[in-house]
Image 1 (cartoon, rainbow, N blue to C red):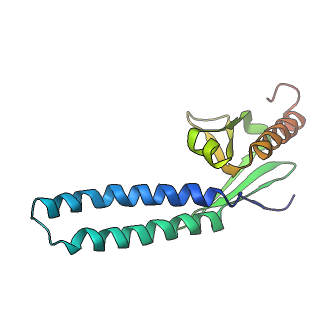
Image 2: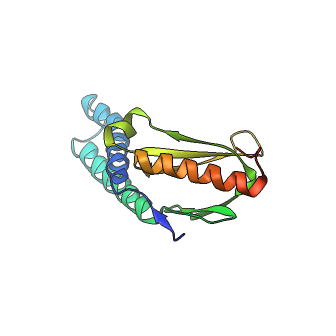
Image 3: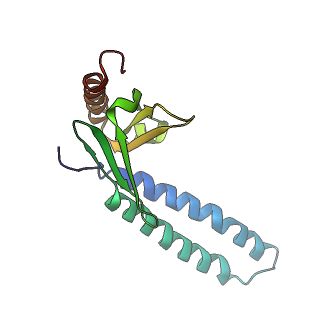
Amino acid sequence: MTAQTLHPRVQIVWVLRAVLLSALITAPFVGGVYLEYLPQWAPVAVGAVVLTLTIAHALLRYRRWSYEIREDAIYLDRGVITQVRTTVPLVRIQHVDSRRGPIERTAGLASCVVYTAGSRGADVRIPGLTPDGASDLREELKRLAIRADGEDAV
């Protein structure tokens, strides 16, 4: 299988998060203007810089995110500032979930979460899938994990 990318709609979700984060970071500067500690241009400048950086990060994040399912492992490649490459051997898979939070449901997206043997919280999440794509991926990983480790894998 060749490297797969995420559904383009995930960019909308990530950009909306960037806007919310920018608003939260800018809010104290608005308060500083209200209390007359800062000049009126300060929140505009801070908001513009933070918004530009967070939206750029969201769009670059989408461009850098890919995954590949092979017969032996799942390969994830992601990261903007720090590039992260993760390999999850299929024999380490404990179980696989498809998940749709409220924001993902609104955008018509889902995630596939792969839980692995190992330390607490040892899981990987593939975001930005269609609901059918997440279900199909879950079933494919289940099938490959069972084949890799026998009938007790998933």
